[in-house]
Image (cartoon, rainbow, N blue to C red):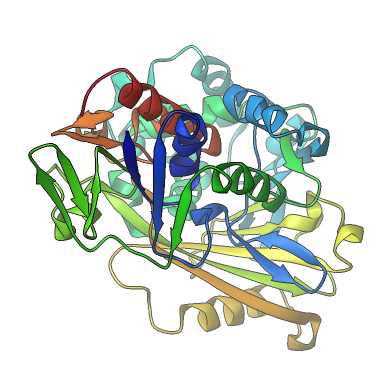
Length: 407
């Protein structure tokens, strides 16, 4: 068959990788490069991701793909530390003693939090899809634990939409991130960055497929014996962009999946200002929800400087001069002189990822809907927490669905 894949992100590349030997494939990508949110900035002699990334020991399909692409020797397991910025103070929250000393939680709060972490892996997140995370935490752990620990986490990931997020997402996140030792979380990274993975996957796909960069899909229509996309005929179409984003081009009228945008400001710096912590959530209101010091996770020596991300999520339009505002506030709150910043790069994606609001589970499109095939960050494999693993699994699942039936 002649197959059209809309979107050259991870799900689209994974589907193309699985289908490339049996079908003729065209990939349509609106940007000038493949990879979507996995893309990287080129800074002098190194690559650094536009949006922070790491993987987990339980990412079976992703780790297997590393092996298929012969890059498994680049994988290393490192310690990811976390903390909170509250009252202009950095609080590490990794060891039991650090958590016990966190002044915004009582000893009883800490014990309840630990018990929830232990229970999370055995819970069914889908059963919590209609309950907000806020309701669930207040009911089970109390108002203080919600405001001091979970509200900053929700705000850092979902911004103004954090109040709509379901308990399913929260429990799913706690479960996936529970691979912790006594001093931090065990996370995976590739030497050379995830650009190594993207290059290897893109090369494997590009040798067998036609890649159409800077070619957004502007027209799609059903024909008697197939589909027509941008004037080209196809036997089947796989869309990896949000379902509502395909509708203006002629795609089917499916229930919209709630999405949000992301603005991520990467900074190259002389020093680091987060006390050795990799992921610092902002408890105090700020134009960014978290400060991610990449070089507190991956050694600074690989880059010759420190690298920091300021992460912000938005719905609707990006606030005016968002990058400048984030940089100024970061410098003010962490007492960073302007001269300490070597470079900055702002990455913005208006449809960066789904918002797992209450009722989200009922909005997930099937891998085959109304004659089209769908896979992406909105798919069932990415519920209730999106990840590289979830997008790989979505790409494989839609490839299997296409191979197993007629469009």
